[in-house]
Amino acid sequence: MNSRIPAFAWLAVTLLAASSGACSSSGPVTAAAERPSFLVVLCDDLGWGDAGSGSDGRIRTPHLERLAAEGLTLSACYAAAPVCSPSRAGLLTGRSPSRAGIWDWIPDDHRMHLRASEVTLAEVLRDAGYDTCQVGKWHLNGMLGSPEQPQPDDHGFAHWYGTQNNSRPSHRDPRNFLDDGEPVGELEGFACQLVAAEALRWLEQERDPTRPFFLFVCFHEPHEPVASPDDLVASYPDARTPDEAQYLANVTNLDRALGELVGGLDALGLGDETLVVFTSDNGPETLNRYRGAERSWGSPGGLRGMKLWLAEGGIRVPGIVRWPGHVRAGGVSSEPVSSVDLFPTLARLAGADLSADLDLDGADLTEHLVLGEPVVRTTPLFWHYYRALGDAKAALREGRWKLLAAWDPPVELSRGVLAPGHAETLKGARLGAFELYDLAADPHETHDLAAERPEVVQRLGAQLVELHAEVVAEGPGW
Image (cartoon, rainbow, N blue to C red; front, side, top):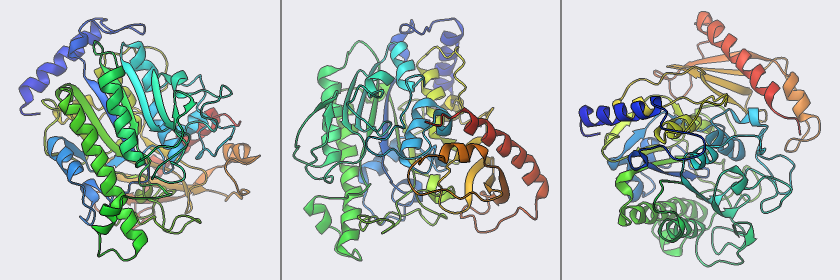
């Protein structure tokens, strides 16, 4: 925001509209022209050290740097989980993904899916009068395009175009995209450009111009199987290996697609009225963790852990919010925020009806983004991932403190994604073996303070144990 006065005046109008009953669950609020549209851009496996405030500058991302200069950088931005499907479920529901039973990433044809009973941000915005579209990676069911499981349109998106999981056979010339459930066939080009082009096509040709919109763009990059344009690969001659050059070029190509997307939004005259969010679903993949991960050269920016860890490197991700005239351009926020906060925040800004008992875990960020006020939470920032690497399977953050907890006693699980018996086992698991870190002084989690600050461990541990038990009890066992 350029000054507190216009931003506060806008906020007062928003609060007045909400309190006067101008919103409903079946149509737009009265002052529809005052409501922003939303563009949420989600990357796949983009590490905190690859772009944004944690970047060491090894990768060229000029469009992302411009977005940061025009918006607010969130230096303590978190994903809802350290792995893809749960993270996406948390973003769209505003709830811990384990509540929804999205315990892990979802393989093809797996029974796990985002149930029709879950209320998503797209549904709430649609009911508030928004036009809605999802483009790119979905990964919230195992049977994309099948009536056997809910599809993106069942979760509130009027149009969708993308894939169940990764772009196949790679980012180059994919052939596994669906258009509203119908196979598209082999495409020519790179996944991120194809996704950006479809998003812009929808904005220009298909959306209802009389209504605000929610556009959810889910890039596949830089998740494996990585493939990048030859000119960008050649532009990294100092890379340690050809595979590293492929990864660095992949992030730069992602940045190029972001520039096309945001530039196209602005060229259509929609930039000033659209709140843009840029983030990632989890931390970077570990090099050679599995066969086919030889191009996973992502960086957690010195943070401990990577994808699949509940340490900072697995869940802290790049975050930028651009909203001209409301969010301070070029600003940096160190307030801990999470993708689960997007649901209550965007719904509030849309004047949507949240009177139903949605049991949200996220907090409304409006006053923080616009006025710089501290975020008020009724539920602490919480993470649960039962197959997390390392000992910790749950975590909680409150202010400067982060508490990690392992299963105590330890639990042995068979291999595989939500194999038979896993849900029952994790529902019966108990937490203990706490680790405590002061992230304000020790963002790399090098000094465990549990023995030195037992009063903090006792207070936060009680919250973590209670929240963990509540969340896992709610999740379906499939």
